[in-house]
Image (cartoon, helix red, strand yellow):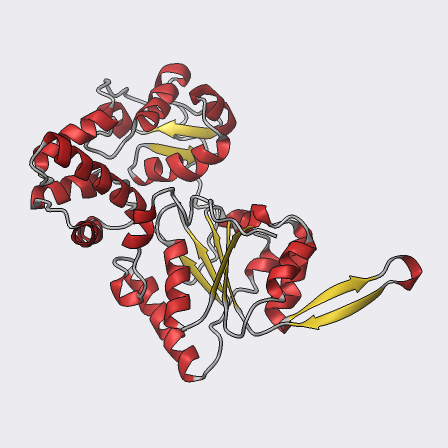
Length: 351
């Protein structure tokens, strides 16, 4: 079967994205606790001449899950195999990959929350015993053959950890949660990427880009490349504050990092539903967005920025959302006290 080279988590359609990705932990900027712990686990595994334990990576899109999988393979001096759960349709698809792995191979499955239950059951045995059960024949003459596998490292990545079955999750020895990046880390990432792209960038432009990239390195790199285009055509080749402000205006991104769809979501809750509460499915239909995109891409950033809350009855905007939209803040926002905010969909992570 074919793997999934076109999935956006590890191929955004721009070859430069691969050029900008670090290959070793020392070059991976941000997520310091995660990086420190992984360095310990990788070093210990190499000193014992063992494969790295299975790793579960979760967090919003664009924070470096695929990059970390690649780094783990490089640090372990091991092969890397990459696929995505939607590309695995039948047990034979997964078995075909597992039986061709080498000792120590890092096997990366993106969107692992979308793995079919029959494939999850195959992975249970593969992850624990490094074997798979394969049925030969049909009917009364059918028999089960246990096929040995090399000792590999499974790295599962997901933006929806709450949708991963507990029996599968508990088989990962190293659960890792990635969170949005701090401003200082984003500035360092932008400077590193600008150096690789050989483009000059002013300090004030670095700060403006860091404030506008939703705490996400992938978006920071994407905006940097677009600002490079604006600087080349509209300026003298140097990315400065004026170029960034003009570029952001043309891309409809404001100083808070909000895109037009972000503002549309906030306006819809305010204008159509009186500030909320409104259910996620109703909101997704109202703004013409897929429910999964709303919950995975837009909502986490809006919640982190203190613009909406998820309550037991639905989504509610905050007073800050009214201020950003330039609207008067009501004395009381309907729905704010209806059950309180809902916690993150998954609380099972060690670090």
